[in-house]
Amino acid sequence: MCDAPDIAGSDPFGLGATLFVDFFASTTVIGLDAHSDVSGVATFGAPLPNDPFLVGAQYFAQALFVETPGERCSASQFGLVTSTAMSITVLP
Image (cartoon, rainbow, N blue to C red; front, side, top):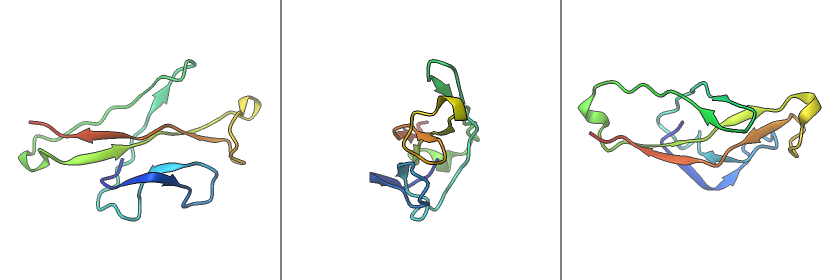
């Protein structure tokens, strides 16, 4: 999760995975542990502190998964699959 998007999407690390979050332009980068099921539904928890300065903050999140060697369907040579990004705005 970052606070800067990469609208067009890019592969800045050359891993064959398109990222829609911009690690280099972000001032905040947060790594979260996502879990997915066999149907492709992923969930993650993002605990927020009770901090009034976070109200209105906007973050962009994207998931990156590693496929098992026997079930690869991505074009990435490392078996990486990414989700589309989503915007998260902290509300009061």
